[in-house]
Length: 371
Image 1: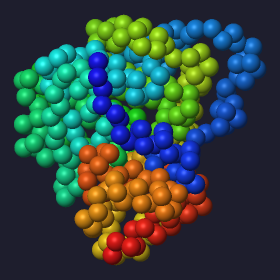
Image 2: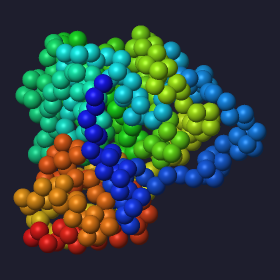
Image 3: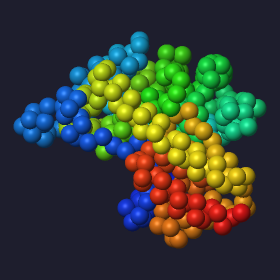
């Protein structure tokens, strides 16, 4: 199995610990173990717990708490994974075979751009249109999702734009996939990180052809424990568990314990509120920064998530521009090329305000030379 280099992740893993400012992040600053202890994590119990293997598909206690988030599901509809990335990977491994087709929205987190290629499946794309409030280009969508399409991958709230699909768009997507026999894989890891308005509607329950993935990394602010999950039809979950047996076997015991605390109803709402507070504090900072460039850049106000897309008006390729920012300012930024949308930068604003302010100043020092 040959798999292409995941360009964004390779760039981040190469440079994120070597630059002075990492503005390529995608979640809010993580909560501490002490903060989780204040929410009820029993540290003494953790210290006395033998570090053996955990239940490979997630402990029953954790899956029971996750079931409460997805009405109509049971513990047999849930598979716990090592992060949302592994959840997405397991679904693709379980569904795609050589010669299959997969549809994918752009911009997006490009993990499932490379995985189908390694499985000898073809990817067809359709765009979310910034000029239409990030609704799908429906002509492209219908060309991408056909009776040959085995799987459709989307992220909602969208990574990286922070856009949220309308209810009408969600219904149209599901109806098309039901007509074509396509499985919808909805990555909902940013659900709960909304800046304003109500909670994003989940795709779960809209069709028996829907699979949802999520995890603790983004809206919960706990990326380091690497806990994600899949919620889907029982037969598919069974196949994903079989794939899991061959891949990483299961999540670790301490992470499962942390996750049980995090997804408890009161704690979940506390963590979501913490995320929204961080984002709400920092959003005006990046908005003011963007406004200072006049017509040189166009700011996209996200509805959810800890990053935004900034369009810049220059012929300089985004990869070249980000390399300049890294070399000249020791600051890492994700180029639009790495999320499927050239001419943009993906900029983080989920850290401490003073860190974000200085990171933006450094990015601006290079952007200002384009005018």
